[in-house]
Image (cartoon, rainbow, N blue to C red; front, top):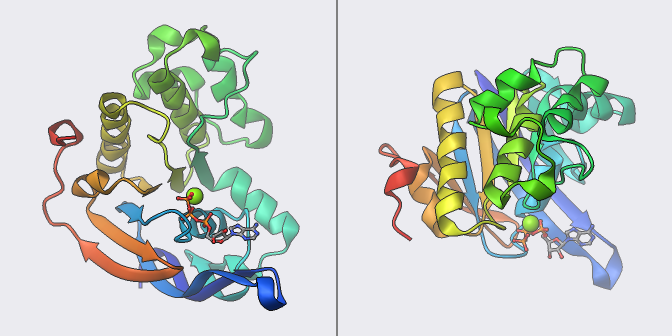
Length: 234
Ligand SMILES: Nc1ncnc2c1ncn2[C@@H]1O[C@H](COP(=O)(O)OP(=O)(O)OP(=O)(O)O)[C@@H](O)[C@H]1O
Ligand SMILES: [Mg+2]
């Protein structure tokens, strides 16, 4: 089996007794290297919980999470730290850039924690931002700031790129550009990209869509003809 990720009967519950909440219930799926997957579901469906477990920021209450040949659900804290630092790139809704650092400096940060980092200038040019190298976040548009955040995530050459509502704070046209960029990175560089969203329009772009509801997988669909981001009608 050549899957990059596998979830086997993964559950995550929070709290105890009467206040117990099941964020994920017995979820199983596999993702292959190079797939571009959209995870879609309404608020509270468990999307962020799933992404946090995948990214080593949270642990399953039961079940098994594998990454390649490794069992992430059995990692201790220091193994999780190294997994997060070296293997996973994160992109969040509100970019989370450091305001007093330039685009170049924000992207360079990954060098502090990872000795395999790429050249930040190359990564900035991959996301079309070579002309914004010395700008601070406040001097850039939302879409540009998100591209810096993507460059920062890519600069450690992660095996997996996780994006939690990456277009949530952007207007629809800018959102399309960001998705188009993520789609291109997956297609051209063979990167495995997982995008979580509650926007059903984005499903047209993905080769695969996992529908999540009430902590369970409602549907897991392959889309043989994902359309180009620029053709999405809003
Ligand atoms: N740390 C926590 N403690 C208690 N309950 C939590 C915690 N994190 C998530 N939950 C609960 O688990 C469920 C799933 O939450 P999650 O954040 O994964 O949903 P989501 O699909 O990302 O929603 P949204 O679209 O609003 O971001 C919700 O009912 C939420 O209240
Ligand atoms: Mg969420």
